[in-house]
Length: 375
Image (cartoon, rainbow, N blue to C red; front, side, top):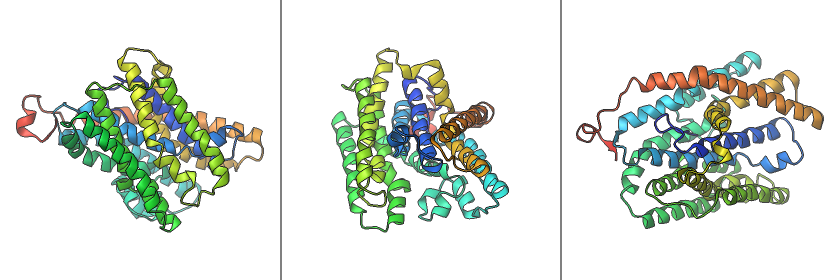
């Protein structure tokens, strides 16, 4: 999971607003599955883990939009990404391990902690490792991989024609379908890791985002309106309800993996439509002041919300009635969002600024001569 850097932040405010809604989708997914269901809402968000797919596509789009033609040195780019995600990751891992160890008296594998802090945990098929440090942080291992390959992707794709980007996007979408079917014979646990967690598999979603961002940067505008793209995303998640009722999640052809692997083109269309609205100068509900603020807090919210759920369930148990479930949900949403705001203001944003200041990008004219750059 990655977010807009301070460089160029909110140039496309609707994308910042979309971050909040994608994070909310993930939070409601975890509340539904780990706490209890709320009629109607839980049905719609039962596969809300697809919100992570949105963030992977968004990450590629925003990075391509931000760095295409910027001539920023690769080492500066990588340091900026480290400064963006690692401080909050470290804090969330410390909090998660403390809750497990102190409150629940459960040991956490040192390999899992080390793997999480080094951003390599999703490469290991053992759940005790890729979920150990902080279960929500598995996606940052994928993001770390995306950051490493981004300079190569940008150098390869930036100078190509639009037709090449179109074929690349089509290849990424078809590749996801082929992987889904091709890995169907694996054992369920291994298949879940390979399709849902492994950075190589998720790279297709990042690539789709990169070509979307490049196309937008070079002047392409989506023919699809923002309301239509939102409607398609909502319709997709509603269509998963009868599919879920007919097929158990354990089956390879269930909507569990499909919801994450097949939603990428819909999210790319949503990102392109929202960006078009911003670039055309049209105000959207996604670009409001409070929505942007919530979007800024969404990274911390994503990393902290499961810890809050875990503590609440441990202290009070799972609610027994629908009314209690609603109150439980409301309490978790308020507390986790408040903690996210505090973490953003006191830890995430100040730490990012301080770390970014340690590595200053060279002058524009000097960069091409002295450093490998993101041209």
